[in-house]
Length: 329
Image (cartoon, rainbow, N blue to C red):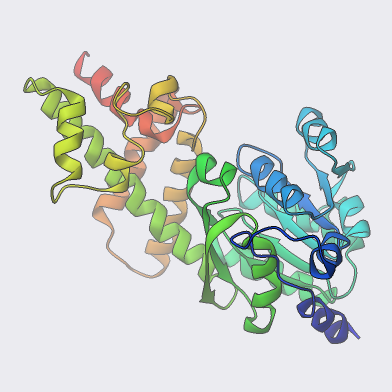
C-alpha cells in the first residue's frame, strides 16, 4: 500500500516556475495538495513563502511563534508541533539548524514520525551529518515513509528569489516527486545519489566557501593596506584569475557591494555559528575518511575563534572585520 501511495505522488503535475503561470487543471491539482514545512528561520521562511507563491497550501510550524504568525498572515495553516504537521500533510520539508534539531523534529516526543502517514515524502534541507540523514531514512522507512536529504546552497538572498541550489540524496524513484517541490524554491536541483550524498556535497561546498571567503577577506585587506581603493580592487579581481563567488557576489568589505551582509553591519545572510558548525561536519567526515584537509581545518579554527570573539551572530563574511580587529591588538 505504501508503494502505491508513493507512486501516486509521482503522478502529480510538476509546476515549473520558469513557465508562464497558468490556472488550468494541472495548476489547480497541484494547488490542492498541501505541503508541510517545519523550520521557518532565515532560510526556511522565504522557502515556505515561495511554495505559497506557487500555489501550494502550506502547513507549517516553528519553535518561534512570531515566525509562525508571519506565514499564517500569508495564508499558511500553522500548528504547534511537527507531529501536528505530519498528521495533515503527506509531503513535508524541514529546514533546521543542526543534527540534534533534526533528530528531535523527526524522532522526538512530538516529532514527525509520531504521526507520519504511510507513503509520506520527507525532504530535509538542513545541513547535517550524512550519518544522521541515513539514520533518519531508516527510522522513516520503518514507519512506511520516505526520507531524502536536500541541503541547499545560495544563502538568504537566493532563498528569497527562489534561486537556491538543492543537492538531493535518496531513492532515485522518489526524485521526481521531490523535484516538483524543490523547483519552486530553487534554480538548480541536482540528484547526487543515495541518502546522505546530498549532505556530502553540501559539506564539501561549504568548506570551499569558507576557505574562499577567508582568502577574499585577506586579499581585500592587504590591497586596502597597500593603498588600493576596495571597489577598484574588487573590480580587478573579478576580471582576473582570482575571481570567486566571495569576491564577485558576496564581497566581505563594507561599501563594495549593495544588498550583501557586509553592507548591513554583517546582519542577515549565513551566520558565523552555522559556518563553524558546517566546518565541524567537514572535519568529522575528513577524519572518518582519513582525508587531508589542512585549509579546511584552519578555516574551522578561524570561525570557531570568531564565535568566541563576539561574531557568532554575524554573517560569516565578517571574517574581514575580524582580521582588521586582530591587527589592532
